[in-house]
Length: 126
Image (cartoon, rainbow, N blue to C red; front, top):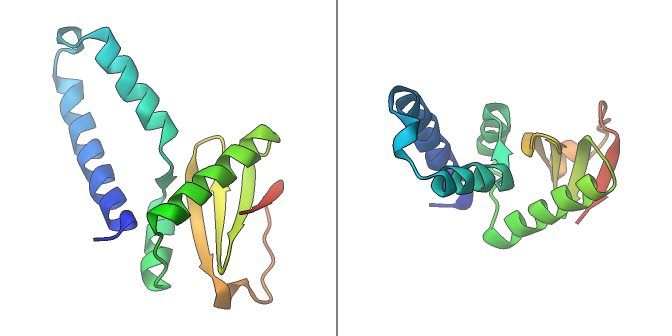
């Protein structure tokens, strides 16, 4: 099971647990637990459904090292005030919403050729 498959499962669990949380009494939880959960959720990079489909269709997978590099790319873009970025990493490219910490779509080396990327305000090469 690769990192993307694990992230998919995590997203499914989070989405189903969020539905259940709405029905439970939040006052039973410790404030520190709630705060930690919110903070850890904000630190994780999310992949849109479209990005996950593109990764499947284009046989793109990410190792843990590549995930770290992607996070670094997000951090660098955020430092510079970039909102929507093209993150280039070797033979892979990611269009990402930095503000939402979400990968919107992915492109492999074949699709990089003769391609024009629009609606971005910065590029990061990691």
